Amino acid sequence: MNDASTWTARLAALDLTLPPVAAPAGSYLPAVQTGSYVYTSGQLPLVEGTTTCIGKLGEGVSVEDAAQAARLCTLNGLAAVDALVGLDRIVRVVKVVGFVASGSGFSQQPQVINGASDLLAEIFGTAGQHARSAIGVAELPRNSAVEVEFVFEVSDSI
Image (tube, rainbow, N blue to C red; front, side, top):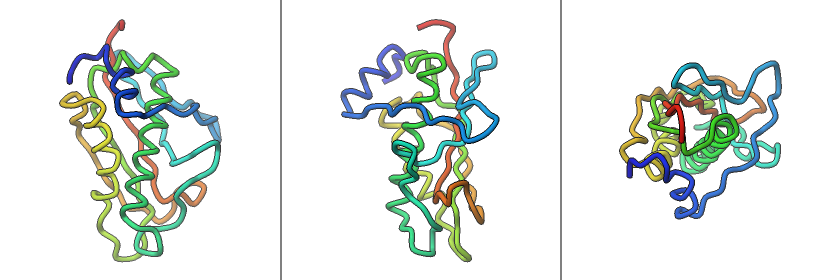
C-alpha cells in the first residue's frame, strides 16, 4: 500500500487508534516541520501520561515487552505528526532512531526497535521502509525502557 490518502483508513483497518499527543515535559515541541519533512521529538511509551515500560533490558525488562513499548512509541509519534500536519500527508517514513535502556552486556537493541519498524511496515507498506539506528543507553527519561524518534517525508497537500 503506497497511497498516502489511505493511512487513516489503514490504521482503522488494523484496529489501531492514535492516542492524544503527550504534553512536552520541557522546552520543545512534539513535532516540527521543515520543508517536506516532519521530525518528531523522542517518543516514550506513554498512556495517559504514564510510562508503560520502565527499567532496563537485560535487567528485568524482556525484549518482547520493550518491542511492544516501541510500538506504543510509534503510535505516539504518529499522533504528533497527525496533530501537526495530518497523518494522510505522510509520503514515507525516512528514519527511525530508537534508544533502549540497556543493562551491561545487553545487545539486542535492534530486536526491540523492530517493534517500531514492524508497525510502520504494517501501516505504510513499502512507504514504511526506512533507515534506522538502534542505540543502547544507560538511562532514559522517566526510567523508560525505550524512546523512539522519527523523520517523515510529507506532501504539500492531502
